[in-house]
Amino acid sequence: MTREEALESVKDNVENENSVKHMLATEAIMRALAERLSEDKEEWGITGLLHDIDMELTEGDMSSHGKLGADLAREMGASETMSHAILAHNETIGVPRETKLDKALFCADPLTGLIIAAALVRPDKKLASVEIKSVRKRFKEKSFAAGANREQIATCSELGIELDESLELGLKAMQGIAPQLGL
Ligand SMILES: [Fe+2]
Image 1 (spheres, rainbow, N blue to C red):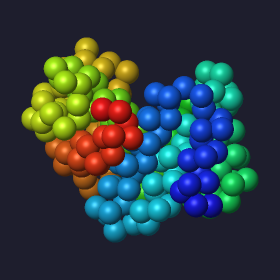
Image 2 (cartoon, protein in one colour):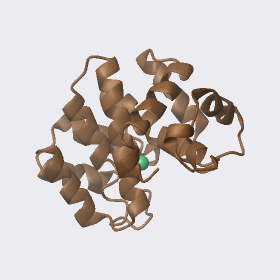
Image 3 (tube, rainbow, N blue to C red):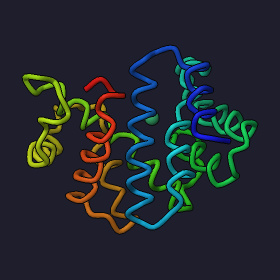
Image 4 (tube, rainbow, N blue to C red):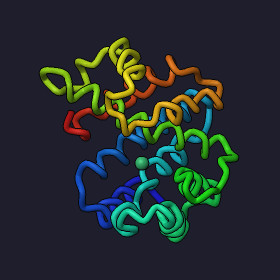
């Protein structure tokens, strides 16, 4: 499966533009994490891109979110490692995170929301004007972007990447695709 095929399939299954942008942002962070850890950037990126492909199909049913996505990814030719990460990113299902890819997807997912929120409070609403120190400050403010689970973001440490570094890596990765995110 190519990256283009994966994106096409995401757009076929997800109408909400913000959801598609969330998946693009997750892809960008996953590529950066793969680069940092000398892992397969294409495999990690496509996993990030596909991870919420069943978001609308499952209609908010958290007991099937991730399961259907993993099946769809497998049908498209994703490896077992990739579909396992998609399955394990939704904790409700109860599949433990085992591989580095599982762990990376789990911590990258909520990080996108924190960084998008940090951009939206800038006067110009641009990622380019977000400074790393403000992301670090916002991380500590629990009421800010409360949906972005801080404990989950901090699990990047299980990959040997401490919080300060993962926040910076995420910000830079998303700044790199700012036009696609419309931010
Ligand atoms: Fe997600």
